[in-house]
Image (cartoon, rainbow, N blue to C red; front, side):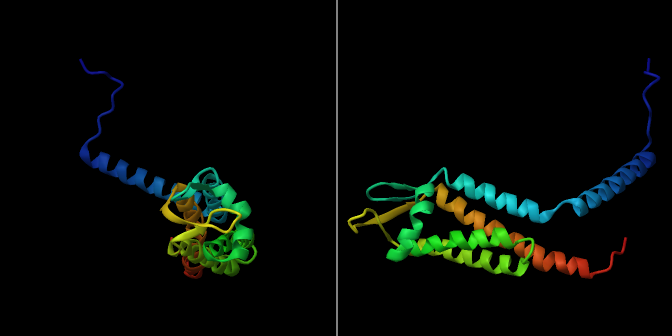
Amino acid sequence: MEDPTLIRINSVEKSRLEGWLFFVLERLILVVMKRINHRVIILSSSIVIFLISLTQQCYCTTNSCGYSIAAVFSGAIGLLLGGAGISWLANPLLLISWISINKKPKLSLITGFLAVIISFSFLFFSKIRSDEAGNYSQIISYELGYWLWVLSSLIMFAGNIWLYFIKAKAAAQPDLH
């Protein structure tokens, strides 16, 4: 015996129902996407990844491994000493990119790009200053903290490209729907 509460749908009706559901879902996604503040998502993603990077080791030398939080706070001193310390400049550039994303998107794009380039420049150094006596140690590996730090800059740069070029282009085109 069949359950009288079951509704039978033939293939034509099923196809129409699926088409209608797809149409409604598509419109719902468009409405939600128009209301999402993409700048907030890009900015918060970059900051969260950066903060997570601070909890990790960033590189290892023949003597020990460096922690990201120590590298951030002592990096300005390393900057004065030259060498791999120059890579620390990516931090203030990333900060400028974060601050300027809403009011000065072009500045945010440029500083985000520079942060990516400078953060990747750390890969070109084979030694890093390892103590106050001026001794250097060979860099033997790049750890998760470093890659998350780079990713934080990449998120800002890629997000700025999307906001500056793609979203601006979409805004210039008339809505055909």
